[in-house]
Length: 196
Image (cartoon, rainbow, N blue to C red; front, side):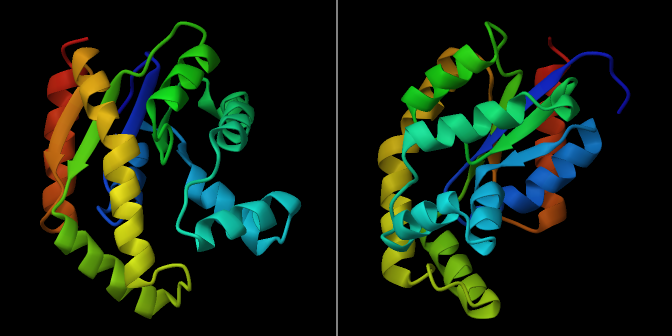
């Protein structure tokens, strides 16, 4: 897609809803970089950095990384040259406080659209248990997975109301094949961004 406008996007949804898979397709279509806090955290864990050790301890407890730490990482990433024409955030912001921090980082500019992947809890729990087995993810026990779903519902779900009020939420059924979900996202974003 060739467009001189800046395209600032966010994808949200419960853990296991397929955000990472769909994020790759969205970034390719809009030619913007994906900024995944999960990827940044995993790279630091793998590199055994000080940040990685802090993050790993938090993740193993099934908790979310503190806002102060996450905000600093995202702010640093948003200052890099490749985001000049836009970006797709994945995994941030996770709560209302982080939304306000992001608003400050964007200096009065706002997100253009927020894609919400709706997915049934039992479906994503089953998906994550299967992924944990295949990928050997030690943090993905059923207990931790269910706890993360509860944390998402408590902290992230209020964002749905906030982004709806801002008129930028694009709700998409996240269940189905990758291509089916991708097509729903494309249609939803075309309708929303075309109205800018």
